[in-house]
Image: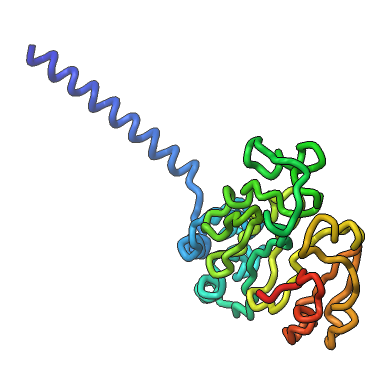
Length: 264
C-alpha cells in the first residue's frame, strides 16, 4: 500500500519535472523581447481601441510610435496631454496639435426638411439609404436620422435630435467612426475652434433645395462674395469654408439667406 503511494508520488513528481523542463525550453525558444518604449507608450494611451489613430487598436498604435512609424500625437482621443507624455518617452517634441471634432453637415430636421414617406424599418442609416428613393427624406443628401453614428460612438458624443444627428463637441474625441459609417458622408472632422461651418451637403440646384428644405444651401454665392478673407467657395452647388483662411468674422452667417451657415 505504502509502496504504491510512493511510486505514484514519484511518477507525478517526475511528470511535473519533465513538463517544467519542456515549458522552460519552450519559453526560451519562443521568448519575444518586449520593447520598453512600446510598453510605456501603450500604458500612456487611453485604451479605447477605437481605431481613430489609423492603427488596429492602441497596441498597434504604440508599436508604430515606438518604431518611429507614427507621430507621438497620433492618438486623437488622448489629445495633447497624452502626446506630451509620449513625446517624453520618445525624447522628441510633441509639436502643436489642433484639436479636431466631428461635425454633421445637415440641419434638415423634422421641422425643416420634407419627407416623401414615413420609414418604419430598421433604424440603421445604411439600410435606410437602400430604401426607395434613398430614404424617406426628399433631400437625398441629408441626414437619415437612423442613428448608425450614435451606435458606433464610444464616447456618447453624438445623438439624433429631431431627426438629425448632432455632435457634442465637448465630448467628441475625433475618432472618426461616425464619419466612416455615415452613408451620405455628412460627417467630417473640423477644428474645435472653427467659428463658422456650412451645415449642408446638398449638391442639388437651389430651386430643388428650396422645395424640400428650409435651411439648405442654394448656392447663391452671397457668402462667397461677402467673405472678406476669401475663405468661402461654392462648388457642386454647395458652399465650403476653408478653415485655414477663415477669420471667424461671422459675415457669412449673417449674410446667408437660408441660414445654412452656422456658428459652432
